[in-house]
Amino acid sequence: MNKKARLILIAGGTCSGKTTIAKAIGRRLHDLKTVIVSHDNYYKDLAHLSFEERAKVNFDHPDSIDKEMLLKDLHEMLSGQAVNVPDYDFKLHSRKEGRLCVAEADVIILEGIFALYYPELVEISDLKIYVDTDSDTRLSRRLSRDIIDRGREVEGVLSQYMETVKPSHAAFIEPSKKNADVIIPGDKDFDKVLYMLHAYLRYDIKS
Image 1: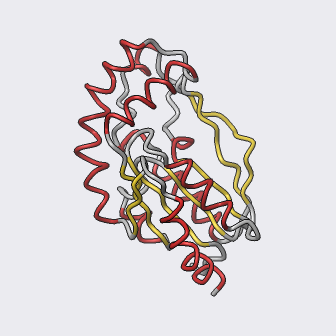
Image 2 (image 1 turned 30 degrees about the vertical axis):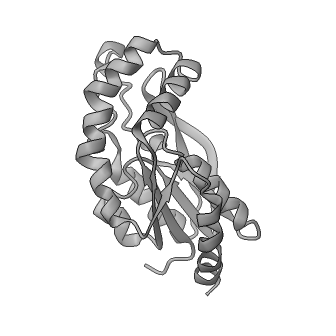
């Protein structure tokens, strides 16, 4: 496949700062058409299940992602074709048609906890980044996010963290760090690291 766009993968544990890093990179590539996509939009659609059944699904396991759809859309994005990225409703656990349309991008940044887990993704990427953030910091951020943005209770968030999030991080996400080209400390001043990456990003994408 002759790629028109370049693909940057950003992985890391839950609430490690992946989106923040992605946006910071996008700002540095301001004169290029840069699109940020989250693989969270590609969770499998569970609308066919009852709400009780949906709530029991382990969303911190790689099998929860519709990998085939994600790869299909990415290949089309990389070749310059127009793709409508789906939306995912985390309160109802269902997927629907999204409003983000990606077409003729120069750079596609895919962020998500499993971005460096799937070999098929790693193989087609141009730059692989892992955001390494302390677990206590990540848990604190997740509590705030899930309670404020997703309407969940403290007890439920903590129970999910101990039962699925923490074990899955150890089993799938932390080991994917070995696939990274660059490891960024997510709880420190990462702007210095981005400054060093800047010359590489500019040269590699422009070349």
